[in-house]
Length: 180
Image (cartoon, rainbow, N blue to C red; front, top):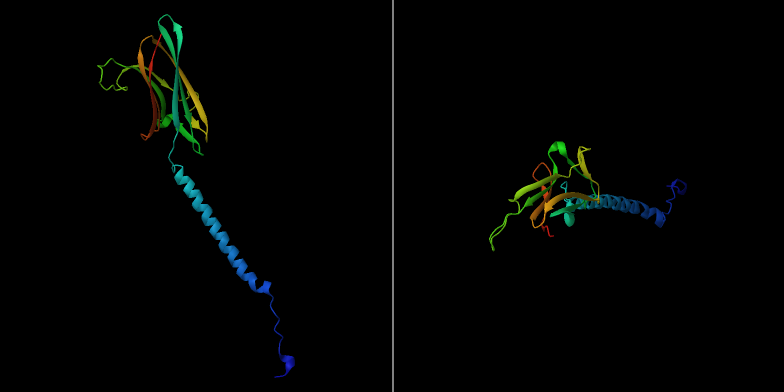
């Protein structure tokens, strides 16, 4: 065969030889990054309680003079949504947020007292009356307040309960003596 029919084989440089390998590695790294991000999102969702809800409740009280042998019990129920998602409590779906005040009965020394069995003094609904729902925004904190007039010397139990219709609830309780 004559030389003029032979085609010269061009020399391929190093860059041209490794370019397909680098492109393949970048595509694999992108796929791994997308998979890792998806796993991380699922992990955060699972760690945060999936589709459940959580509101942290705490209660503080103060007894103020009112009139004669009566005192004003001021109750602050503080709530915090620690999650990064909105939680909504809907009245029409039988969700509730109540504060119950009960007078505790006298019992003998050493006996256990059931703070949920006393005489009902007041039941206060913290659900808003001007809206259909109570919405806890992400990482929001609220302070709901109620006042009750009580005689000096009474001992009461306070129970605040935030509840969903499906029997899922968060309570906070406290016992207060109304001192002179």
